[in-house]
Image 1 (cartoon, rainbow, N blue to C red):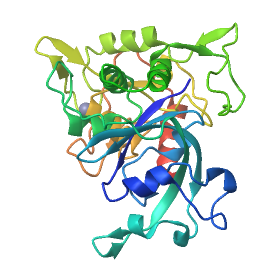
Image 2: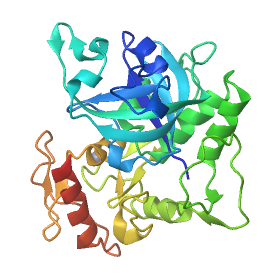
Image 3: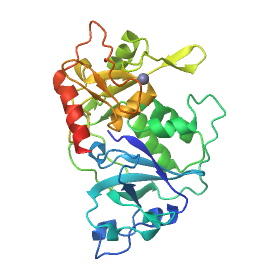
Length: 307
Ligand SMILES: [Zn+2]
């Protein structure tokens, strides 16, 4: 299944991002003129190893709102900084180094006819800055965000791609995404990509209490909220299992910290290492009937070492 990710671009970068690379001596031909996004070293962006071709990027321009909805195609590690736009690198006179380039397709909507300004005055459960910190890999926030986008005027093709993201059943598809085909054909067999019943049950087991900090967040005055995190991610290339032994129940902040590799957990003692939080040195709170597989904690820790 395609996942949706929120990308932030700076105002000064937008034009260059949406136009894409133009130099065929530095970029593969098939990426020329298609949108691209750079990840600076240490940047708060999706971990490229978690992206699958065909994933949807909801692209925001900071201070403006959503300006495009793109399809992710390929991530490449930057070995030569000269392939990047100077306008990206120059950060108030300081030259930033970039680690990754995310090459995209300008589909389903390269540039919205009018930017979607985020005005969460309705019953949207979280504030915008919070969304930006947690949108990555967080099903509930993405779902709320996408629903909100759907209620605004965007193209029909964007709507249909966004709805795809919300679906729980997907086509059995081990082939690379075919971008030339606007409507991907559904096959007869479908499989659930995420056992939402499972994650719902686990959140109930934990009463929406974060296993790291013990906090519970509210999404309304009477309704609590938590997020499920797969230690070994479900998507390629990780292919982690969707079962209890691979899942943690977390608050949005600690979910983001797991996604960004800010937290490691000792597989044996379950002691937490989190250098930027007072949870450092505490122990993961695990429910009596919840066995977490050491292998998956170890996998998570190994992924951090690669970031
Ligand atoms: Zn927490």
